[in-house]
Picture 1 (tube, one colour):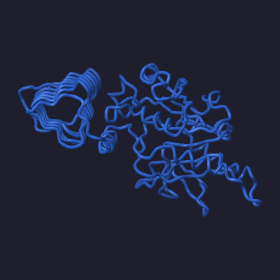
Picture 2: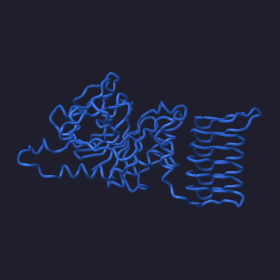
Picture 3: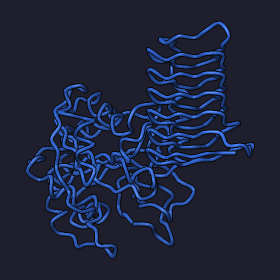
Picture 4: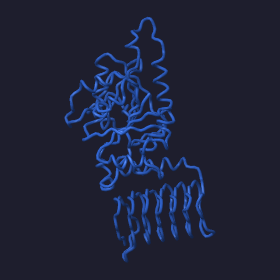
Length: 368
């Protein structure tokens, strides 16, 4: 089985941060979102992976490389414009061949791994059909991951038949047939290639993967499903990204590889990376402090990730993600914030009590 990770989107919902970086490389608990997907594929035994890239292709290539650091081999496929998820399958045809493959949205995060999802698909396809079944019709040609949602009209929604198989897919329906939304992970066999070649662009000018799956259904192919175990987050907006950071930090194991002086307190599940220094400060976990970062006369509250080579002094910050190389000094409190690389946030005479920020790379901000 092969892997196809989609990382060609423009990240408009995370602007201005994504004017200068790929949205798939924004970190969750100090690790780029994209890396979690690659690692999930490797853990599922998928070692031949293609990443579909767009305008940020160079940055993604530099971050991921040839994949050897993850124990996989990575091929890059350039998508000249964001023409839909099914279009990604279309342009990856030569890489995919006739193999089954997992397709994974590069800015999505799942609590559950891929191994069980892949094993179930392979197990069902390996089962011998009964005498009453046509062997091709009984074999699942695709498997989708579903989860109940409160607002199904905002998602692609699946309708299930009496035997549990998918019988209908509707994109953002006004009258949803169920509350089961499609999660951004799919498995397909080679039948999907005819499907993506047969569908027409949607009203927004894209080849929709829901239309391709619906084509499989309308042409007599079986589509199976699995219900998601745990949480799923699309990290394409600030607040869901911060929530995802919170959920991942809840799983960290306390590790103090850096220096913590006697005047400081490190409470709970906190990672202090090698070369980091905590001076006369309190870090209350869950939290993560990056390599080479200096925290001085500062309170770092729960659910905060501070990147590498930062300086945080005379400040308070919680429930935030701060990327590499930032300097934050003299700020009474920052909360619910996403701060890009090489940002400076400094004190000005007029002080405010709480600040909520989303700052792009290389910003320079004075706060009262």
